[in-house]
Length: 95
Image 1 (cartoon, rainbow, N blue to C red):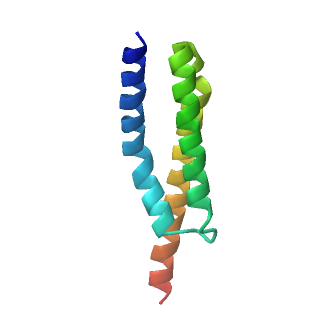
Image 2: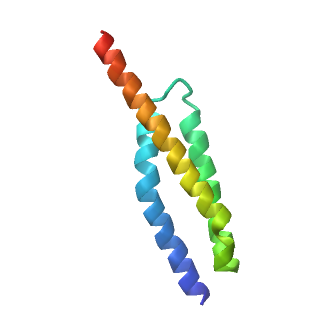
């Protein structure tokens, strides 16, 4: 049973990385003024994955806080990335 839960945690983390890492890369490449923001949110995402793992391994119903942390950080990174790309495009248009 624990092996199945560990495997599901691993697969879920891989699925979430496919969403989060591109947002992280774009946010780091096009910072919106605070270069430290993308790594900080990346650290929060990693902490959320650890909370998810610990909760899911104890009881699958206890994974909600970790899952919500991952979702919220992905949304925040998406907003930062889009804002950075738009600012970069506008800066090129002005020049």
